[in-house]
Image 1 (tube, rainbow, N blue to C red):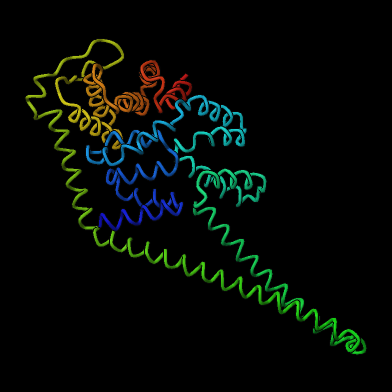
Image 2: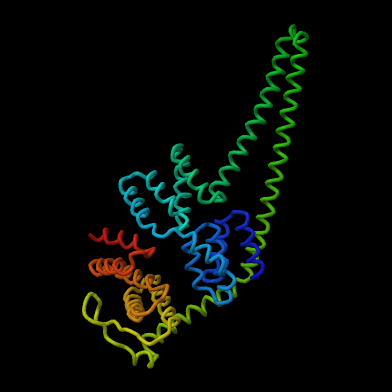
Amino acid sequence: MDNTLERVVRDLIREGYLSRARALLSLFQGEYPHLRLELEAAAGNWKAVMKIYETLSEDKKAEYQTLYKTAKDRFKGDYTEDIIDALQETERGNFEGSIAALEAVSKSYPELVEVIALKLEIARKKKDRERVRIFEETLRKLDPSHPVLTKHEKTVRSMLLDWMILTAVLISLALSVFGLFRPSTMEKNLAEVRNQVSTLSARIENVDRAINSTYNELSGIKSQLASVTDLQTQVQNLGTDFRNLEGFVAKSIEDLKDFIVKENQELLSKVQMPGRGIYPSSMFAISDVSIETLRSFWLTGYRLYRERKYSDAFNVLYAVFSALKDKEAYFKDDVFYYLALVAHESGDLEKAKKLFEEFISNFPDSIYAPHARYFIKKTE
């Protein structure tokens, strides 16, 4: 299964079908990080390449060391101002200006491609030709293989072929009518008619060749779809194993939560109450644990946030960030950002604003900094 998936994903990347490769890898969240690294490199998302590289095993790091150095050389630093410009243009109602600003950072934020694709479909339905042109040009620069583009191009080719066939039929009908109602001039114009028929025959041959070419293209697409269908069948056959794995992961997370909050006496012996400030006195802090353990706690806090268990999530995330204050970890800004986001989602806007301000002060170059500024402005 691993070899088959790697071969399919790499073929899609090599052929430029980045959206399809990204959709396929989304079925295996958390797995195959080296394939996600190759995909982001193909998309030019060098910041993501560097971040994913840090999560690889030592063997994989050695294998992708050259690609990592390339990412460091090509990464162009801070896109904060571009994001701020895009947000300001959106608030003014200048969507074209917003798209122009976002184009510069779209490779660092691949999800913007789907936003532009959605806007393109809406513009097509509204028959807004100017916006369709702008969105098509933008999407073609970002992902020329996107299904929204390829589907439209097939429709245009089909309509053109139908038009050509209809034109040929109308010309043939016109010649027949002309011959029927002008019998006295038929003999005089016979040579001209023959020339027209010859020209029409040549056009029909060209149409026939175009039809054959289109049929060959459709056959190739059909073969690709058959390969995807085979892969989908394999994935469906593994459905039971994935469901069992999902149940096992869910149970492991619950066990880990119990381990943090209730059962692990060794960890609880290291509990220290935090100082006063914007943090509730009911939270705990942890210390003297490894980075890997803290990373597990961070993922637990994130899962609690996704489950909307904001109180538990805030406690766990704050404990992790307290333990990371004097340590170096690539996920340190992730922990603090989601700590502030949990406060915002739970409705404590005053606390959230203070946390977002503290986040920007501590991590001004983080990829979350533009989002933190957005929430600060929203709570004012």
